[in-house]
Length: 310
Image (tube, rainbow, N blue to C red; front, side):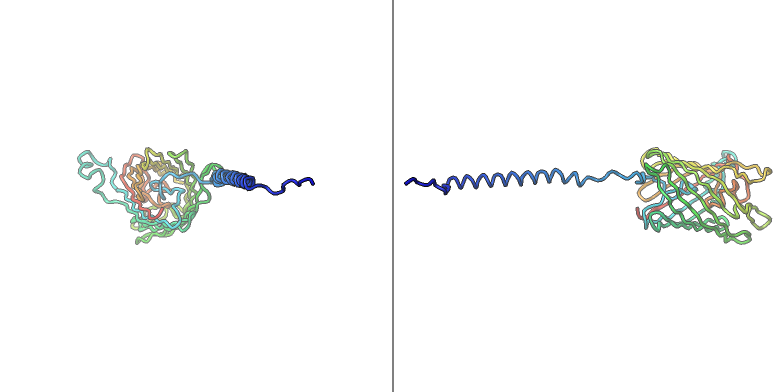
């Protein structure tokens, strides 16, 4: 009788079979794990920024020197502002007189104190009080859009009103509206144009009373900031001669030039100007307290702002 072939594997063959099976299992799963680690970073990569992501703004705060900016801090942040404009021009008198008065630093000053609060990331409210006619200004500023690769400029709208609480003042209240358009060139230069309108603007002194010089006033102030180095900028402002002034009133443009230093949450500004106005209804008319502006006047001034929050 012929013997049948052996159907069962030997122990050695079984062990070899198991080792081959374990090796294939290890290779398959090791390959899967390696591919997984390679693929995960690809899936986790940050997507490219949107063309509507705002550019990083230059640190300027709420104002250039007196004119508003299109910037608003992070939601919940607030600022306190103190402005000082000395009344005596540094070109007044001879050299001895100027030295005696410390180039106007000994003179009286027009002072403004105020605060602002970012209610949300695109809306801010502010309150500013000046000792000139005890003028109290309440305003809101809304950022419509910010400059981005797909947007060539930033646009903000500012609106509000003033009430003058000093005695013997007529036309006590004013309303105003401003559009703040700005364009930033890289990280060092930003320019501003601020079409503005105000009611009962400017002042005309009549005896012991003060009246509005304009029932309706409009103008387009402009400004610019140039970063010299991190935290230090040269800032300039220009207010054109108001075209509605009578020809008999010879007045010049309003201007201001200053340095802005940013240290932590502080903004420090020192400036020269021929116009001490800090409120919209004051600087739109190319006059100040009923007097036409003289471009040769050189008034020293400064601003201090403290931001709480980002």
